[in-house]
Figure 1 (cartoon, rainbow, N blue to C red):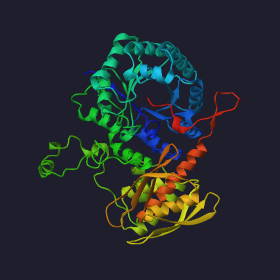
Figure 2: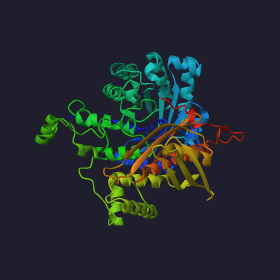
Figure 3: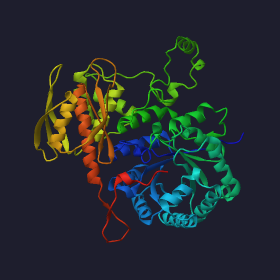
Figure 4: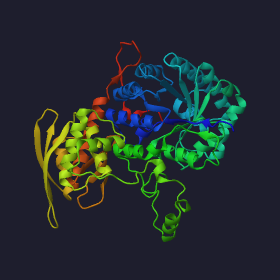
Length: 536
């Protein structure tokens, strides 16, 4: 029997996934997710786009030094300063890759680059050569490949390989392709360029979900020669998102009869915990009926289905929930639980804590256990989320008070503390308690934002459950998500709003000058995160 063909999993949750509106992560959150992606078995982790900001640069550098097995990739346009910046961020990585890209489709050539294809091919080859000066592992992407003429794709692929590219990615940048068409792109390149197989060049698929076909297109690519799939946890990403890692991996596993030739290194039992971590940290809730990891994925309400599952699980379940790490029984902790039990549970959920962090989170756990009788996994995830967001915050809540009721004008008094330790108080009225407290916060902070979405839900069951509030706000041209937790839902809403404001202020701090070229002492140019070019 022929040996299985390995499919490399290239996870871009920390780069393309973070480009979801409002889904921004701080460095510690990125490092924690990266650790868990490596433990999951991901082969390549795209950690960020170093040129876009100091924050992205530092995150890529920190992650590349943290990980040992997985390859860490940094994204760069076919621009010399981008490649220099990526090379600098990755210079101490154990396994490093620079991922360069350049638009190639007619619509991009005409309206975005305004450059002839011959020049694009020359620029791409030069950029691959420059990247090879930093690393041996270089990936090249012709952006919008699925809408690029096939003869041009052949030419630019040949040039990139000749220049030293080891992986060629053919992105369906805007989610336009359909499976048969997308698969044909891969088979055509292999037919026209037999040297790809001879040189062991890896072909990669990067699909967006604008038509809901990202996973289908990725699987079609595999059947036609792709040996790397680029995807994200929970399918997060720009617009409608990227191909979902969990759906691709579990399709290959569940349909071994059809995909018998292919295998991945993913430890599927870690899928659910990583999914929960990414959802908690980004604030992007997984839809209830989401395949594989949605709340309803293994729920059966119809009587016929329930009867069938009780008699034989496989009548209506094609996967065992234990295979994705869905806990069969959730350990319940309480105020009498010890530090050791708590630490073990935190570790089981995928978090890494040193002694000081364990002490801090254990105290938070004990405080919560005093408020509610039973503490569940979801509660611990909240505590860990708060721990990872702890740090220098410009504004922190000291106390608040609201008055509202039928026939009353809602009023709120809020006291905040700034980063210097100075407390400031103000009051406001509003159309309900949330509106009033948010108006008071804006008066204190001076940050004018528009609330675009507000949601609240119970983290666990029971009348003593923690409430989770999530807000999405707009500040100038940026959307930012904030979240907060408390057994008091109004307090949770206050903390979510402050979280969003602190993120906005952190962005403004990170939007600093970045070097235009290594060794260049000329004035630097400010780069805004919101103008990212990495929309492959």
